[in-house]
Image (cartoon, rainbow, N blue to C red; front, top):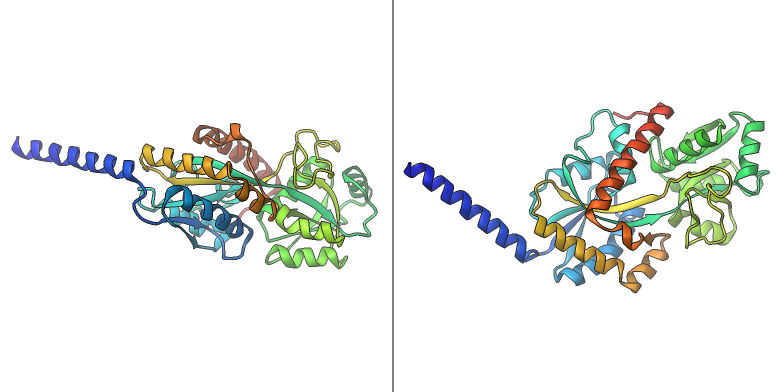
Length: 325
């Protein structure tokens, strides 16, 4: 009986300590895991977000880059982190939505191993083509693809990358066949589009904007339902006949399962402050990214959104036949 009472007392004490620690969080620097290498698009966005988050939280937010295996190594590490709020991850469409269907052996479950905090930002994916391709818009591109089955070559950052699957989704929705040419990164693929050795690429806004501005490639469509504020004059895929086509690259904050609710609420509140900061919005705009609308920023919204994204990309990946070990 005494042992039982002692055990109960220890449990109550531990719970009280955990609750107190959650209420006073953060009391030391916080780590944001970015599951890609320094200098990557995700890293660039993460550093902009971390700077303002640190100001809001009153503690430094340190970026820890853990690249490899399409972001799954770093995401697996985040899933196994101590659930106290001192490590969280900048997740994205690739590591949290596409990965579940793409990898045969994923070292984490994007739903069961994490708690959603906030959907933060979106970056448009843009269909770019070589300047001399005989297509001035998406409708002409589709017509050209149907007239030349299998001849359109599109590049990507690698098999199973966001740029690969976005183009695969586009070609499937348009009912055209194309040849996928994987590269080790998006930069060399873009260079071959510029040089005219490749017909096109589905590029992230950060990589697309400089090329569009300099006129080295021809933009045909934003791969989404609506136009992007970053490229307001470029029609969306939905506007050009592919109704409800939507494939933006999104980024969100997640914490390991078991993180106290008080910490989740505080981190969400900090994210809301961040997203309402004009200087942060302007810094993101320069790298082709925008904050999501105010009605899409709650943990509850992110959970539903993630579930729908996993289901959507599972169907697309299954149809493409792409799998990774």
